Image (cartoon, rainbow, N blue to C red; front, top):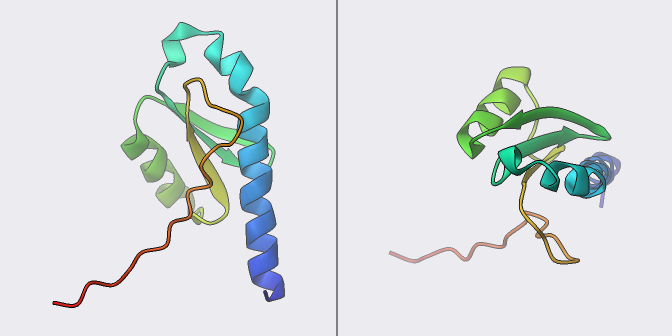
Length: 92
């Protein structure tokens, strides 16, 4: 892994960890049930009702999807999906 990839990977994980740190506080307010929380590093930069709003905010601020974490406010198990998926190409 090159240096830039390692830095991006680290920023994503810092963002996810900040979401998990704040999740109990967010869950305590029923108003935020199923809202989207956007984190960049240790900072929550948005808490909005929809994923579309969250992605729009990231796009407007020029934030890369690989740097931030958008989490849905609902009770999670111990392991939160990292958002990385492998996609197989389909031959047409």
